[in-house]
Image 1 (tube, rainbow, N blue to C red):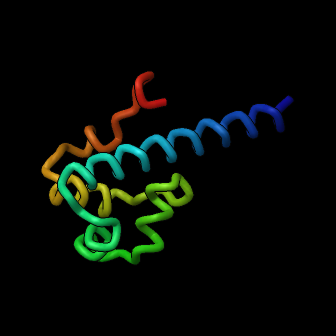
Image 2 (tube, helix red, strand yellow):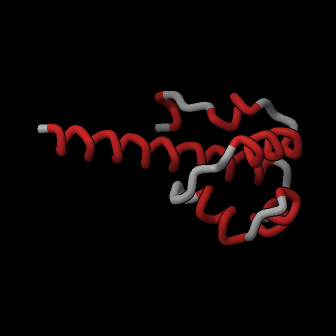
Length: 86
């Protein structure tokens, strides 16, 4: 039972990371950034940016705040998860 619960929690986390990654990608494109240009502006590798957008790697608070500043949106907007984007 506990193992099943852990698997469900892991799936939920992965879904949320993917959803946040989709939001990052949408906001990035809205500002006409390529993934490579955006990664450079953030000071991270293109591979790390790709992994964030694909829900593989979570971003830390420093990257979140830099994204917020560059994209001119609040951190909450980047992390926005609702039933429309699940």
